[in-house]
Amino acid sequence: MTIRCLAALLLLLALAPAARAQDVGKGELWMHQTAWDYYEQFRRDQGRAYFAVSTNGISAGYSYCPGLRCLPLDGKKQAISACQRDDSGLPGTCYIFANASRILWQGEVHVLSDAEFMARLYGPDSIEESLQGYVEHVAGLSEGSPSKLLPSAKVWKRADFRFAPADLAPAGDECRYAFDELYQANVGRNLFLLDAEGRHCAYSTGFPAAQEAEAFERALAACERLAGTAGKPCYVYAAGSELLAGRSKL
Image 1 (cartoon, helix red, strand yellow):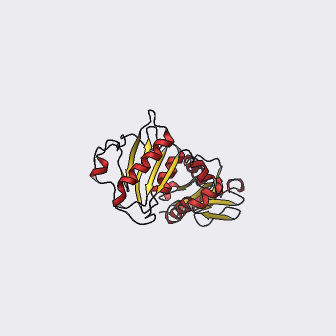
Image 2 (cartoon, rainbow, N blue to C red; image 1 turned 90 degrees about the horizontal axis):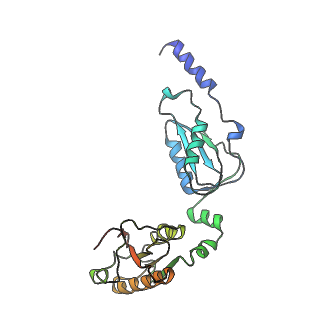
Image 3 (cartoon, helix red, strand yellow; image 1 turned 180 degrees about the vertical axis):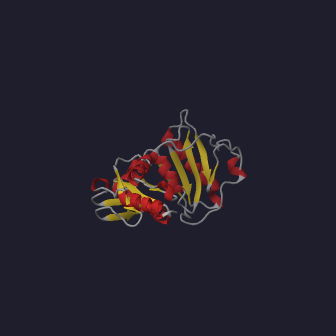
């Protein structure tokens, strides 16, 4: 690199705009653990520029430059745009959280687990309340104990055991939350059932293999009770940790 090119490069670095005060977030921030983990990923990126996070605490994005060819770089706009594209469905405004060397956010930052974040967002009791009428959990006596994949052929070959169509999936926030955060997190998961629209669901956990028929029957009855049996059959969406949508046998 010639002296003239080096001088020009240093000038571009000197003129690259710092984050303006109005770009930087202010106030107390309640940050979801996944957004913080994303910030840790940003810190490991050798070409990092700016990291932005929404005031909702979960949407985030960052800008980077993989080499000197990117200079001059106004990475603030790119970071905020990336944050805005990370749509969580929650209201909020994206601001700069950090640059390549330090956190710029002006205010106390709290990092919350998913359970803590949801409790703060909806209140300690409202998650359970919101599931009522959409989700039902049937717990066996071995709740909390690891269980093998259920059921056996004598259960899945029953006429009332319906494999989920390939395009069936939880359609509402309630059943998505129940499947991702409650059923999947349980070490003793048995079966997860959905109605034909994916709006109502029931799941069983904690039943040993000797009670696999009961695990299915009680979950089916719960699902049908929520969905209404007239024209709304319930399908087995998952058995253990295995998705059954689009399958016809185990």
